[in-house]
Structures are given as C-alpha cells and as structure tokens.
Amino acid sequence: MAREQTQPKVTITNHRLWRIRLARGLPRYLLCAMALAGVAASVRFAIAPPERELATAAVRRAAAPDPAAEAYAALFVRRYLTWNAVEPQASLHTLEPFLGPGMEQDAGLVLPASGEQRVEWVEVVQAREPASGEHVYTVVAQTDTSGLLYVTVPVSRGIDGSLALDGYPAFVGAPASGPAQTGAHMHEVQDPALATVVQRVLRNYLAASSSELEADLTDGARVSLPALPLSLQSMRRLDWAPGESSVLATVQAQDRRGVQYTLAYELNVVREQGRWEVSAVQVDPDA
Image (cartoon, rainbow, N blue to C red; front, side, top):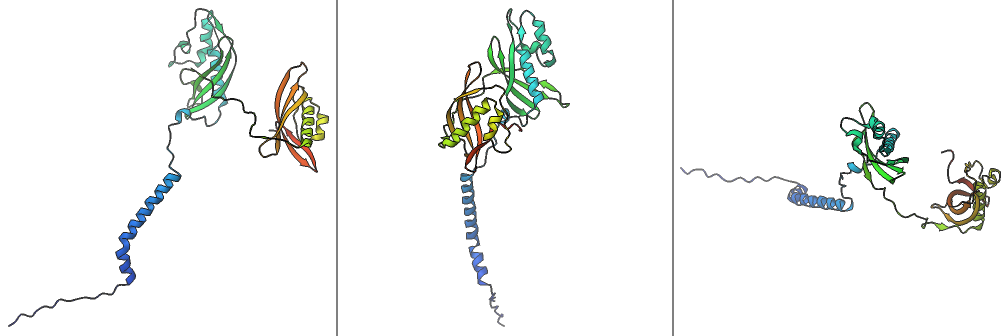
C-alpha cells in the first residue's frame, strides 16, 4: 500500500503596506537620526563650547566686604612696619595680640642694630577670598623711610567669628594700572547756550554761591557745595557723556592762596521750554 504523500502548506498573511515599508526602512531611519544628532552636537560645541571650570580659587575676589577683617589687616601692617631698633621690645608688645603658637616671635621680624621706621598711613586696596572665611588683603602703607609699600595679609575667621592671622605677610607689587584716560570716546558740545549755562553754574558752584546757582537749577535739584571755595579761571573743554543726558566739563580753577587746579565735573542737564538747566553737579548728596 502506497504511503500517503504530505503536501507542503503555504500560509498567506495580509500586512499593511506602511508596516512593511517601516520595517524595511527602520535601520536607515535610525542611522540618519544618529548622524543628525552628531552633527547637531558638533554645531552646538562649535558655537557655544562648554566652559572649563578653571582653578581660580587662589584669585577669587571676596564675596562681600568684611570691614572688621580689613581693619584687622590694616592695623597689623601699621604695627608690623613701625619699629625702633633701640626699643625692640616695644615692637614685640604691639604685635603680640596678632601672634600665636604657629608663628615666630615678632611675626618673624628681626630688627637691625640701629634705625627706626614710622607708618604715616595705611589703606586696604585689594581683597580676595581663597576659601570661605579666608581673606587675603593687599594693604598699602606710606612709611617715612622705605616709602610706599604694598603688603598682603592673610586673615581668617574662626567658628566663633574671631579674627586671626592665617600666615605670614608678604611684600608685593602695586595693583596693575595704566595711563590716564581723558575721555577720547566723547564728542564736544557744540551748543553755545549750553556751554554758557554750564560755565555759569560751575563758577557759582565753585564759589559756593548758592543763591546765584539756584537760577540755573531744575526744580527739586539738590547740590552740595564744596568746602574749599575756588574761582573759575576757564572752561577748557565741554563734552557730552555717553547717552547725552549729562556733560563733562574740564575747567581750571584757583583757590585763595593762588594754587591752580585742573578739575573735571559731570553735570546732568535737561532742556526745559527751550532753556538749559542743571539737575545735578558731580555727586548726589542724598546717596
């Protein structure tokens, strides 16, 4: 008896055309998407590259002024630079409140066999904060023998808020500076009427003549007159300040002793009913 022959079966399934296209094109779509993402990242990096976090802790400026710490540093510099070789113990006595077990006697200051030095004045000119609660102040001191000196003083605050030296001082150079800028970016005032008003205002202002000055001031303007009366000799230049709401006047003035000064004053000016008036001169007395 012949064995029954098995016939292969064919199954036909219906699929939507968009699914077939999607399945065949999916790898290509993914590859294109990855390429576009890479291009976008490269463009962003070129236009706005990520900023590197620089190690600027050593030069970071103090977050907020600390008047007590500044005064502490200034007092230390005054006592540190004031000495008399004949009385070495006096120097040690004045520095004693600043010293501690971590510093040498007299803060490491060894006096010569003779001589002396006095400090005429001191002032803090720069501050930075290496870490929270730690300050490094640059103090300028005018001495009678060594001239102008710049000294850095590290100061820290304890947990209880007390101040202490955080190390030895250091002699350093002056903060960077450059030549004086004389307003080359400004342009000169060409209005004769405005120049006349400014000159008259400054003449009365420098002479402390409040009654004459009021005639050229706006209503409500407050002006604080200088304590040193001066006579206006000439107005050398009158320029518009940026924004043209104020002018910068360079003048020559003289005091009662005959000393002459070249001075610069900024005046806020407004035009009211065809007439120039001044609303402020150099400073705001209420600020």
